[in-house]
Figure 1 (cartoon, rainbow, N blue to C red):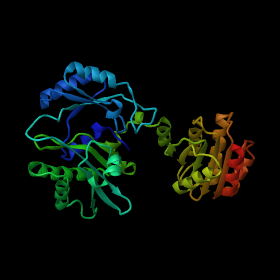
Figure 2 (figure 1 turned 30 degrees about the vertical axis):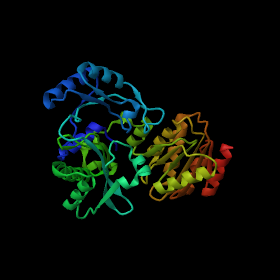
Figure 3 (figure 1 turned 90 degrees about the horizontal axis):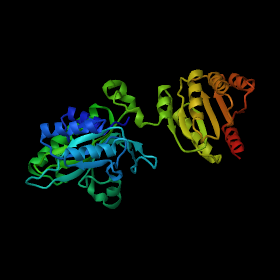
Figure 4 (figure 1 turned 90 degrees about the vertical axis):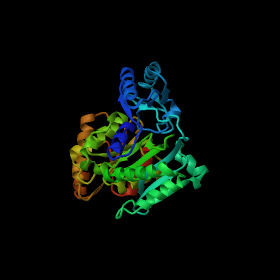
Amino acid sequence: MNIHEYQGKQILKSFGVRIQEGIVADTPEQAVEAAKKLKEDYNSDWVVIKAQIHAGGRGKGGGVKLAKNLEEVKQRATDIIGMQLITPQTGPQGKLVSKVLVAQDVYYPGESETKEFYVSVLLNRSTGKNIIMYSTEGGMDIEEVAEHTPHLIFKEEIDPKVGLQAFQTRKIAFNLGLSGAAFKDMTKFIAALYKAYDATDSSMFEINPVLKTSDDKILAVDAKVNLDDNALFRHPEFAAMRDTSEEDPTEVEASASNLNYVKLDGNVGCMVNGAGLAMATMDIIKIAGGEPANFLDVGGTANATTVKAAFQIILKDPKVEAILINIFGGIVRCDRVAQGVIDAYTEMGNISVPIIVRLQGTNAVEAKKLIDESGLKVFSAILLKEAADLVSEVLA
């Protein structure tokens, strides 16, 4: 689950990570009040107005602006709130900005120069260990750094059985070229960041940039956090941070029905039980000459109600020209799936797209009989190849 920058910073701060302080605002008037509060608490004459959406590259799309006085705060907030912000990560449709973060100015003058770094913590799935990836080239797209200057990216693996060790935090600070007070502060920063990542069951913490201020303090200027959905039952306070307005409405609806659904750009909808079978079904669709319109796994405990909800969700996509239902009845009974398809078909009526149903396993014979006797325009298949041939036929 993705969360906003300001929410990620709240989590970091609770674990002792120094952050760029800020206040969320829903209106330009609230932004002005936030700027006044930052002036009072942190003596921040200038502030940064940052659009809060679930996407990176906000500055490139005009979603991050500096304001030098209260008049500029109001104007910048007015410009950003309500805009359709397009970044390299949003796609051409962009995302609607409904709130901004008014953040303190941390690039103040001092005895030494400021310096930006990149730091992220994530899981290395090939080794089963956590990894801290870091670079001296903060503030840039890490993909560009990896492509053009890969020698400037460092990695530190952490064995989850023993955790992050002190010598590793010192190694990171050394590789970043720090010394003195900044060196010590970076070791504390890394230790607190890793603790936050580990304790929250996150799948990624990305801080870009991590800033060394002119008085040698280390702090997080940005925070991109992805929480593991499967662990949210242990963290109800984080589950409450979910912003469904940032998600595809159909995916939100599917989630409410306990369906694993991801919308794609193809023309053949698919309903499957099991992620592996879903991937194989998507391959079959491509081999048959189509493109999958979605990934939809109804799970092993699907019933008629679940299948009906899944069927209706697929049909909401106007690009769908055919639907392939591929169910292996191990735990779930095929006749329940068939009844769900029939119920949804009957209720919705006037369904113009052809439907191919392949049911194998528990009560498959009963399921085929239900479909054959329903009087509905549904193509039944036994073998996967038969289903693929039917997809090719209906798309021709």
